[in-house]
Length: 335
Image 1 (cartoon, rainbow, N blue to C red):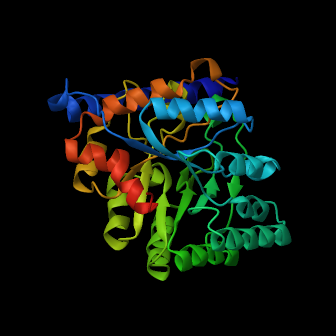
Image 2: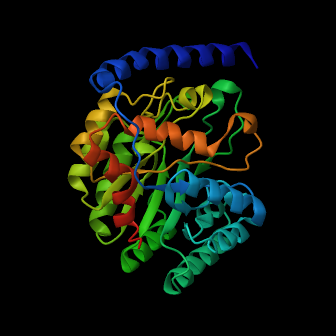
Image 3: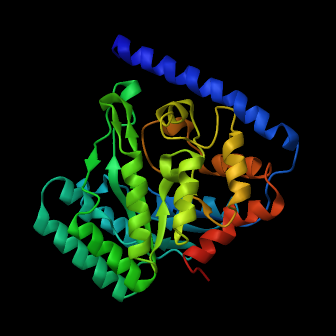
């Protein structure tokens, strides 16, 4: 890794450590409470294997961890992998799994393949009409390389927010009254990109234009609680999923995108306050990628969920259940 990469890594680590003190201050009064023990829904899960036996093990592990249902969806970069549609079909056969329509049209737009993108949108329409998917996602309209501090490596996806096909898909979600999961990173420090104000305006515009669509902004919107609250106040049909950053690299990689937890697996105090103020607007989504080879020796889904339960235990009981289970059940209209 280049010297600048090491410097950026250490700067990011120092920033996160400074915020860790804020988390300790925000959660001190809750120290020692019991872990959340109720049912959970994992509303964002991305298996990286298509092998039926491996999928069965993963979904069985989820059930053992108290996950009542998993929402499986493709990532913004999965359009490059032609067999991932087979993953959705196989995952949908498991009784504790709900799948979303593929967002691959976004990736093809990113590459300028307009006709293929149109074909993908037509497929979404057909699958929604046939009840084959419970929503659409994960639409990565802005997905930058978050490994830049460690030397880079993530493919980027940049699509115009108001592209006609983006609005066509939002219109489909509105017509069917289903969720659409949106991954839109507002800032990217390496290129001095700051689109936060524009993206907030966009959310406010589309939530009014498509009032029956249930908009889910991923990873707490990747913005500050104050900025997310501004959108909440304008958009009653917008929700935010949140994930727990489960490694030092993940915490540092998300340093500019307002992750909800520190290196000690504690919620930052300002996010705790936000969860308590808007308990009906947040949904747990692990963003877990079972089968990913990178970092596989340290990845254990059941242990991760156990940590999430411990963290949820720091919140009031009524808030715990909403974030862990009830909100996702309502938004996705699950049985």
